Every structure is written in structure tokens, then in C-alpha cells.
Image (cartoon, rainbow over all chains, first blue to last red; front, top):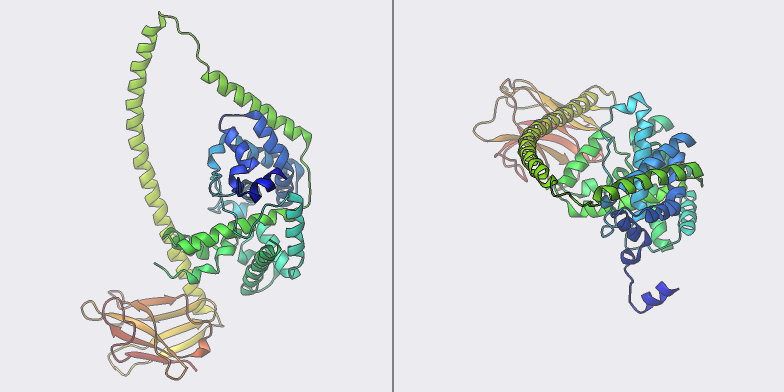
Length: 199
Length: 263
């Protein structure tokens, strides 16, 4: 309420300035354990849910979550709050780590060049995005994805959660490559339109 | 700079990590050229893709994980603080410190020397990686050409010539992978002039569409790959090759040497 009041006066309306996550990340630079604890409590369940969905194994998922949060602790300077919000960056980092882990288990994928220890770049939130609490954000994305054609949703999930390429998805689904490309692109564009409309 | 429009439709799939290696390499090369529009689109697409994380079913990590992490973090924080704390230095120790400084100076010099060596090794490694990428690109092109030439879905387009001293050429058009034009014992164009491929549209008054330029090798052989032909082959009436100034022309300046009609 107080933030809303300030916003109505045009004060403190830059969400990056008041973002609790950005402030906590800044505190990690001086090794503030309490800030780390708060960050963990705020986001560990989302990170764990994502990593578990990718790896399908609780023990391995916890290893990866541990690795992700220790990276935050040891490389807090890698996050630049000026460039974009924290949570999408954290989720991208977690997904990359989980997919790297998944690929290491597969001899076929071991030779891929895109396994890396680099941290992902921070993506800025689009203009249409507004601050939402996490529960509403989850409900909104799930509802929009449920509104896609089942094959569009399936193709996007195979790419996102299993790290498959267009041609690997085409092989898996036994569908033409061009069809799979269209499903993924059109599905993501519909999701984007939905997010724009919902904002 | 490459036209960003052809890359724009790859951005979402790139952010998702779904592009196959050839498309991914092409897009990364385009982004490295500094296309601001594509960089902005990628930024937005990265954010969009990150939202897919919320599709994962709800789950909670164990309390043990929390305990392990906090234990590690507290230990590292303590170690960091103790390293920073300053203790009183006894007077007699200044001599030892002076010796240490001398040793440190030597170490800095030695480190600098090693760094020069490392830089040199890194440079060599980067050059080798660049060579490998170039070879991979060549291999991808060769594989694509081989598929176009052997796939039964490719359409064969013989390219004939009125000049009896010139050999016949052949083009293969694959609806998805592109066009390969190949020939042997083709004479080298004079001076800096080059051969240029044209796509002649079926539409009445349609102007020839300029395509790629080529010069045969010393042995007269060449193989030309066009990766981005029009979506429909049937909008094209014929393929033609003319001789043009170096770098090619926006419209043909000479009569076609070879012509292949698409039936």
C-alpha cells in the first residue's frame, strides 16, 4: 500500500530501485548471510520445482539447486540489477545448470558445445510486464499455455524442459521439421500476446 | 550487415535453445555484427522463455538442503572475515615483511611473464577454435549440398548454353534446403569479372532476382549453394547465369550464358 501511495505521487516508481531481490543481491557482495537466507527462502521452491521438472529426480535436483544458490553467493556481482529483474535471470541460470546436468548423463549430448559455466545475461522485462505476485504469475502462465494447441504446448515443453532442438523434437514427435518450428514459434507468440493482453 | 528480417523469426527459438547448430551459428554471427533490433528482440524473448519455468509442478526442497547451504555459506563468510581482519604486527617482523615484499615483487614479475605465455597460448587456442568452427561450417555446407544433390524430392534443372565451347551445367532445387548449381571445365571469367546466378520470376514484368556470384576453381569446377531461395519454386520460371563485374550487379548487364527452365 505504501509503495502504491508513493507510486501515485510519482515517487519510487522504478521497480528496479525498490526490488527487494536486487537489494538482497547487493548485500551478498559483502557476504551478508541473512540476505542469502532471505533470497533462498523467497525463491528456492520455484528453482527446485523447475530443476526437478527437468531432472525428474529429487536428489539430483537438490544438488543442482545447491550449485545454483552457491553460484549466487560466490558470484553475486554477475547480476546487474540495472539490466533487468532478478527472478527471470535466476530461473534461466537454474534451467541452464539443470540442462547441463541432464546432458552430461547422455553420451550423445556430451559432445555438445553449449555446456558452459558462464552465467546467463540478464534480460530486461518488456514494457508490457507489470509487477505481479508469484502465485498470480504462475496462474497466468499456466492458463495461457493451456490455451495453446496441445501439440504447440508439447513441443515448447520438450524444448524448454528437455533441452531438445527443433530436429530432435521432430524426431521425437515423428512430425515434419517445419511443422515443429511453426508450433514452437506460433505458440510462443501466442503466449507473448496473452501476457501483453493480461497486463 | 546482414538483413535482420531473415533472422528475426529465429529469435524466440534461439532464446528457447531449440535452434539446430547451423541456424544457431548463423544467428550468433548476425548478433555479433551488432544488430540492435535483433538484440532487443532477444532480450524480450529471453524474458518470455523464462516465464515457462512456472509450468513446472509445485515442489519444495528438503530442509536438509537449506541446512547444508547455510552451513557452507556461513563457513565461507567466516573465512572471508577472518582473512580481512588485521592483527598487530610486532616490530621485529618488519624485516620479514621487507623480505616478503621483495619476494612478492619477484612473484609479480614472474606472474607477468607467465601471463604473457598464457596469453600467447590462449591466442593460439582461439585461433584453433576459429579454424574448427570454419571447418564445421564447411562440413555443414557440404552435408547440405550432398542432401540437396541426392534427395529424391530435389528437382533437377539442366542449364544449357548456346556457346558450344561452354559445358552444360546442372542445378538441383530442394524446396526446404535450397539450390545447388554445379559444373565442370567452366572457363574462368576474364579479369575481375564474375559469374552471377539469377532467378527469373514467372510473373509478367517480374525483374530477374539477383542471387549469388561465383568464380570456378583453377580446375574449372564449382559448386554454388543458395540457402535462401524463394519459398515456392513454382513462382520461378528459370535460372540464368550471366557474366558481371566483380561483386555482381543488381540487374543483368550481359546476355545469359546458361539458362535452365523450370518445368
